Length: 355
Image (cartoon, rainbow, N blue to C red; front, side, top):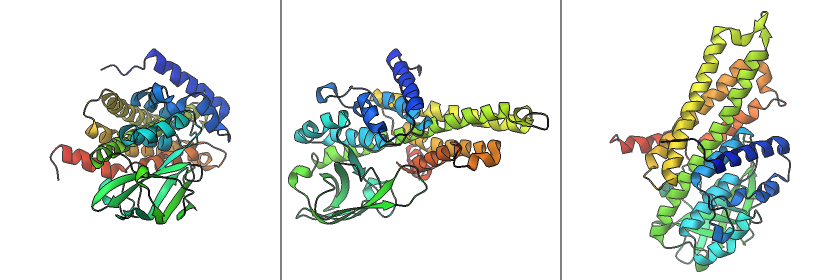
């Protein structure tokens, strides 16, 4: 199995790293990303996209995580796009995908209920037989900017996904106060009317599509963590080389050398599991367990990298002016989004026969 990026993928990585280094986190970042075609990476060419693979997306998101770049890329360009491609109606795909590929429209995803579980079987938001939606979703990215939201709901015992506009009567968007860098929102639904055209394809297609989209989102979040951890590693090793204490660089002390070695091990192992899962998924091979292993390991290993980075840097790593705390927060939020380590380890346990 050869994990070396193709020539096109190498160009994507180099372009992303150079672009993000120059642009930083200015307010026009999403528009400029759209100009590079990134929101349409997963969208087929017939809908105005690039027709790329999930492995391409993982390589790009790794660079976004390394730069701690803001924006709703994972929510709209990965999860929402995957859902629409797999279970959207012909009219929904025709109407939304070209505009999403060009960055002109943002479609968010509202999946997480009050209980905090990413398990689709535990959805509490209710859709009545009369087509009325009630309940609330939390930690919804880009709800203030999104033109539409894909919302999971329970309807007569089944889990359905509906496409709604946040401007519909009965929809309220409220900012949430979190430690994360990316703003998130609570979206509440008070007897919101859902038309038949707002539903995705039949239930069997929706179930398969929802699990597939969740796995794609989990992989993207794992890539985000690996990219951020890579940057922590680079900063920490450079600091160990240049920070002088006791008449020599702190990297000359064995304790710091061991810490740096631990960081390298964790980053490389997390990246290996990530690439294996992304490659299998892109090739259409069974990868549910691989995705779970990649997300669970990255969630724990990359957090360990961030904490070790703070130990190497000392007090300066906690200053607002230093990027380490931003990277740490990015890793922490990504470790929870798409399911925490406990959820994905349960998938692994079931796959090997443990209960």
